[in-house]
Image (cartoon, rainbow over all chains, first blue to last red; front, side, top):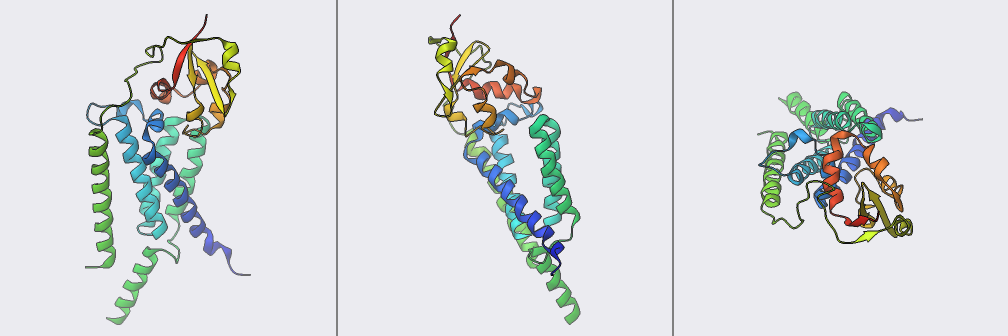
Length: 134
Length: 124
């Protein structure tokens, strides 16, 4: 039986990418329905709550794309994890607990070595080959 | 230059450019919704009884009343960030209790979102 733990970071990476892509796209498509989650302290005269939601959605979509491609997997997972931790703490309740689950998944991905299907792995391999050839 | 560095620069440019573009685009949009600062601030001449609200108690027509205002949340069911269940739970009922049990951090903005769906007042 092949070692299934090879697929752990793969499943985690693609699963989280789908979650962030879905939520990010929903925020970009209809930001007005998400303004309820904008923390009060971010209120300012320069950027509206909808713009903050658009920025948040954009960050999550780009983060999802980076997770899919596996470029900067660990730092991206860490940033998304901290981002979700902040949201979980700020929102609280049942939604906060759900976001805490996503946070732990992100942290787990940040702690694991990028799998063989990531650009990170490809580039590190290229570097190894070039180093070996020189 | 290493391909990973090229890609990183490209991602950074797309990310920052997209973020700036989104904000500039959104801030230049004309205000289409009337500004509402609170639930009480949304006025309407329509008046509905609790009996009328009870008749709209499912996903096909979802009315609720919160703090004396009546809302048609049918369109909002699928859009609610916290999931459709919490909206469906208050269809055809007085939603004041569940609404006020929300975390304080989202309350003010939730009132703003809700103000778009007000259709009248609860008859006394």
